Every structure is written in C-alpha cells, then in structure tokens.
Image (tube, helix red, strand yellow):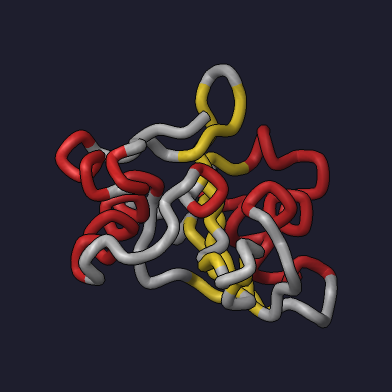
Length: 144
C-alpha cells in the first residue's frame, strides 16, 4: 500500500449511476486527469434493466486528490465518502474477479457491469481474465 495515504474511496448514497457518471460526480470534468479506476456494482434484473447497490468505488492517481475528496465529501451532503478496504487499481481488479469466482461467476459480466479503467486511448471496461472467459456470458468473453 502507498504510505502517503489512501487512493481508493467508496462513494455511497448513489442513485442510478454508471461508472462514468460516478467519475463526473467525484471529479467533475477532471476524471481523466485525477482518476484511473471506477466501479459501480450492479446486477441485471429479469426485464434486462440494470440496478445498482447505491455505492461505487473510484481510485485517484494521487493520494492528495483522494484526501481532498474525502475531506470535502464531494461538496454535496447527499453522498457519503469513505476510504475503501481494498486500495489501488490492481488490487481492486484482483478483488473484483476473486469475488466473482467465489460467487461461482453468477452475475453479469458484460462491459457495462465491469469496472472501468483509464487506458491510453480512454476509459474501458477491464478485460475478462483468460481463465474465466469460458465462464463469462456463455463464453462470449469480451464484448465491445
């Protein structure tokens, strides 16, 4: 873990929000500059719509920016902000797939339900690990 402070925060009391919207809530239009990971856990209902659990995670590139977000509570009373148990992009991605495996890979792993990370060409859903591809979406693996 980074000795200069936490970088991953949990944002609570979200309404229907995507990972990209969460970046806007947390960072305004500076999401690309400040963050490199965002995730809003959600599942797909029988009618095909997505439902989230009213919380999400963001990872800041710089602990100082995370500290500011934590201190000012995003400047809006509606949201709760706390330090996440799992810190860092790689650790959070590892945790996502470990939890998915523990749950027997039940759930929706299409790109809109996976965490997003910032790559050189923009934000993209994390790739499905090779050893899990056959278990994801009937072997469809990478969509988009």
